[in-house]
Image: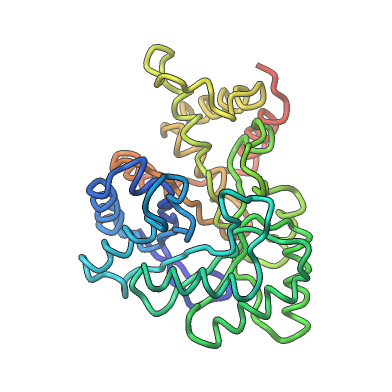
Length: 327
């Protein structure tokens, strides 16, 4: 993979980011190590985790970060990686109570640094917004963490375009560092999927698209491949995995988008999953999808898709199909 510079920073990153929400529970520690090994063998260096990952599984807290840290230490590879993690997530037993004070953000970051076994995080995300706090609070705290050397740059996950713009405007006026990127829920079909039961998730929308076009800030979206829905839909009916139809993307709009994906897949001679990733890459601002692969085969397919870009006409075909819901 050819590395590129994350806009507005000195970070050199791979064109896909390996998400680690599944490590240590959906896949074993041994499988997690093997997947991370394969990612770096393929030239990837950008890995995304969070303080809260795996806390929904009884037992060890912060297991996701701990496994990533163990792998980095065993491979002695920290200096070759760009590590992103997230803090400020509510406790899972009180999701309605924000945890965004300076003390809470610092506590989360210090715990992440300790478990990851590093003295700094390359990209630090605010995992949730807290609209009750002014944007100045977040920009000032994050700038202080950069000044202290604990964070190289920072971004916002699950923030609305209005809040991103307000934070950006304040940072520019005050001569402070601004968010280098945002991390929303964005993929083909997400705008018309069934709502998530998880509170606080923010979808990429037209306002966010305008913000990123105007500022050139990168988008690093999660759920970028719609949980594999379009790849599963492309299979023969008797080859689709059990339970595929329960996907939140299985709506009339999602099925219509899947038909358009299948048509483009045949025309371009590439898998459906490649079309879904190219839908994100083919934008006038930087996009680095977070891929939540669980197997080496899934990872290799995502890497193989990197060169593909769609024309504006092809993008519009996907958008029209997703909006119409007509089969």
